[in-house]
Figure (cartoon, rainbow, N blue to C red):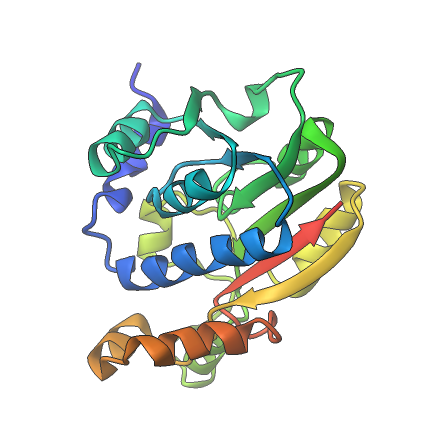
Length: 238
């Protein structure tokens, strides 16, 4: 029977209407994690996705393990990043078992895809080394661009999933409040929360403005202090 996760591989093949946003956030937040984990040697990453983060982390960490449940996504990654060779384990997150512990665990934009986020967060506590850090990144329902769309009458509900969300396998959005509660319920202590990319307009509008790289970087830097308004939310927990 075909792996149901394989049905979402098309969003990682370079023809997604939101590749503009993905390129920004997926190249930004790994650098933030690296800055916060300078002495770490090992990292466990959940999900390959577009492959941008795996490529960045593999250059930084001595040991890099990636868990991915879709054979098609793995194949797509190896096609687009042939020189990047993390240890890839084909498994559903819920089924992963190991005696190994990691200095850093990253759940980057995966919790919006899974059936039971709390189960996933709780399950991976056992793989975190003493003194280790776990990072969780999620999409923000209350991002500035979504708020403006709502006030303009274009978005009836901040939590509504778009057609592209459904195609991408998204099941939910988060808010600062809901992510904080989920982390607390899983038994973690939150050490840091910051925003990922302060995006003021729709993707189509942003692309039409053709901002230079320094402006996009400025929007990412500005978002750090405004998780409640940024496109994504990043937390570091222990």
